[in-house]
Length: 352
Image (cartoon, rainbow, N blue to C red; front, side, top):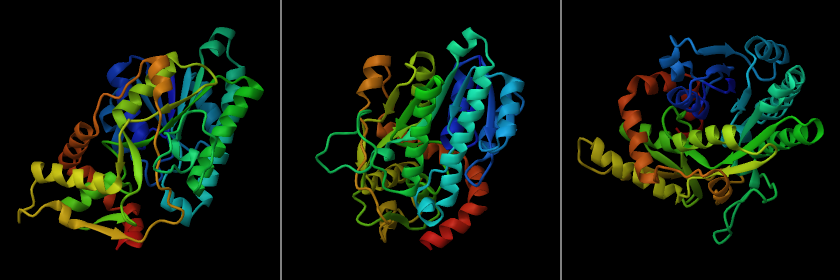
C-alpha cells in the first residue's frame, strides 16, 4: 500500500503522516502547497526516510495531481488539504472557495480518472478519505444533543460553508460515479505543530511571551476538543475498516468553554514554567470583540465510530493539554520560525 496525503505539511496532516510512519510500513506521498499554514519543518524527521516522498503543489492543479497519481500509484488518498481558519474566511473568503470547493472538485475529478485506470481488485481496495469538520452542522443550543452523522448541514461561516460544499461533492462522486469515498467530520483538534492562529497554541505562545490571551466575547463559546493523535488513530482505523460511502464523526467527548481552555493552559504553565514574578498566567487573559456570526457551541457524538469500529479517544483533555504545552515549550525554534512570517502580519492586524 502507498498512500497520498494532501495537506500533509499542515497541522493535522503532518501529525497523521508522522503517526503513519510510527505505526505502518507502507510508503507515503506527502502533497502540500506550502501556503502560510503549511510548514515543511513539520516533516523534517522524514527527510532521509526512503519511504517518504514530498510533492509541492495545489490540489487544484489537475495536471500535477494526475501525474503524481500515475507516478506513485497510491492505494488511498487522505485529503486534509483545506483553508481552515474562520476569521480568515470572513475577511478573505475567495481563497476558501478556491481551495475547499474548487480544489476538492478538481482533486475528485483527477482521482476518478486515475481510479478508472486501475484493475478490478485495485479499484475495490482503493479509498478516498475526505477530512471535514463539525462546523458544517452549524450551531447548537446549550441543551441540544451533540451532532450525529444524521444532522443536516447548516454552515454559518464562509469556512464551514466551503467545507460543507466539499463534503457534498465527495458524496456526489460516490453516488454518481461509485468512487469509494469515506468522509469524516471531526471536532476541534489540538496538539503539536498547530499553527498559532488557533486558540490553544495562541494562548500558550502569548502566555510565555507575556502577551494577552485574547478570548472572543465573553469566552463562553463551547467546543468539543480532540487530541490530534487520537484523531490520527481514528483515520487510520477508518482507512482499514470504514464502510465505503459512510460518514464518521470523530470527537474527543470533551466539551469546554474557551475560558475553561485558557484557564487550564494557565494552570499547566504555572506548574511547568512559572512566571518569574510568580503571578499566575491567568492574569493575562483578556477579552476582545466577538467574531461575526460566531457559533456558540459545537459538540460531536462519536458513538457510531465507537460502536462500529471500536475507536475511543485515549487522551483526556487534561493529559492531552500537558503533552501539547510540553511540546511547544520544547520546540522554541519551530515557534520562532512560524511567528516571524505571514502569521505575524495576520496576528498584528487582528489582536494588536
